[in-house]
Image 1 (spheres, one colour):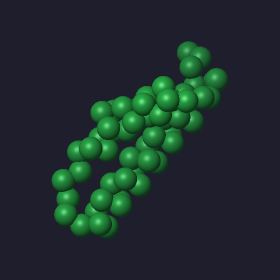
Image 2 (cartoon, rainbow, N blue to C red):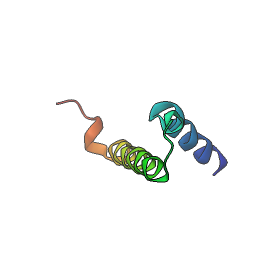
Image 3 (cartoon, rainbow, N blue to C red):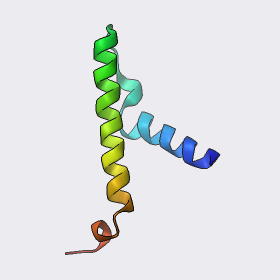
Image 4 (cartoon, rainbow, N blue to C red):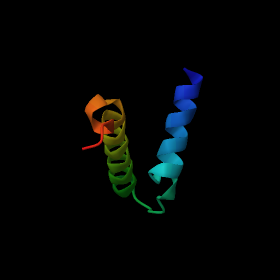
Length: 56
């Protein structure tokens, strides 16, 4: 389980830019985190979809 948490943390920070927010407001930070989380959900669903990996 620890590996999964570390992998997700690395993906969120380095791959999706979670740590790139430089705003000043709670609302801006909340929007940024919401979009990064939605992007991670899309990537996870695509990774788990067996049809996504087959060539056309």
